[in-house]
Amino acid sequence: MSHIMRFDRIYIELSDICALSCSFCPHSERESRRGVMDLGLFEEILSQLTAPKRLTKLVHLHILGDPLAVKNLDVYLELLARYGLVVDLVTSGKFLDSWDWERLLKPPVHQIAFSLSAFLDAPQRFAPKYIERILEFCAYHREIGSEAFVHLRVQDRDKGKLIAYLCRGSEAMQSLGATLVDSAAFAQGRGAYRLGYKVFCTLTRHHRWREDSKEGIESRDRLFCYGAIKQLGILSNGIVVPCCMDCFGEIGLGDLRAQSLGEVLDSALYREIVAGFRQGVAYHPKCQRCDYARGLVRNV
Image (tube, one colour):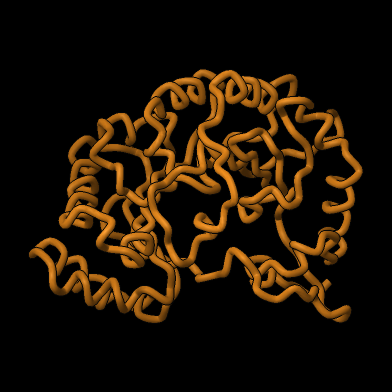
């Protein structure tokens, strides 16, 4: 694998289970569930990511599903630490109280991001004090002096809904709402507002996971994406995909239950996708219709 590039991050889906059905997520469109990734397969993947050549330093435990819903998450974290990898967790926070908070705020965890838009989309699915518990988690982060980053993420289309909800809540929630209202960056719909040391409320761009149009981009359009170039995804069933947007494995590059990662990255499909993006061309029809990739369009 001497020719294979180094990735900024690898997305590994521990499971596709999250107990939610958010309107902005394709979770409910699945025809079948993949379930939890086998621990043996997970360790084999980590070994291939780190030897003989380290392909990344950072693993995102996210594609579909919520890593905090995995009952033995601590075992997966121990393996990641053993292989010298740092970890970003993305969660709705619904299962926050299932875990020891100190464990979530120490290595190998580098960052934990809470999707507040999941709550705003379906508040009845969460405990009444959901946001208060997240604020308590942030306070605990400060109390123990954690070096992990904490992001409270909300899609830009939901920022007004978040402010309105905070203003009706507890004193702590109202205080958070007031700080966000006073933030120029938050008001203008971009960036991150610092709530404390390594703790931020971050606006993210809303995008559609599934493109309604069946038509590809027009020939004059140019499309660029970091999928397969700077990032890679691995579904919980071992299927390798170019990025975290391919949650159904529509661009299956290979199967790590039957192939090595080196073999997958030597495949003709992988090489064609990478070569295309480097020339500003989306090789695969799914990439041509991808709403997220359209946000990365550049002139080449």
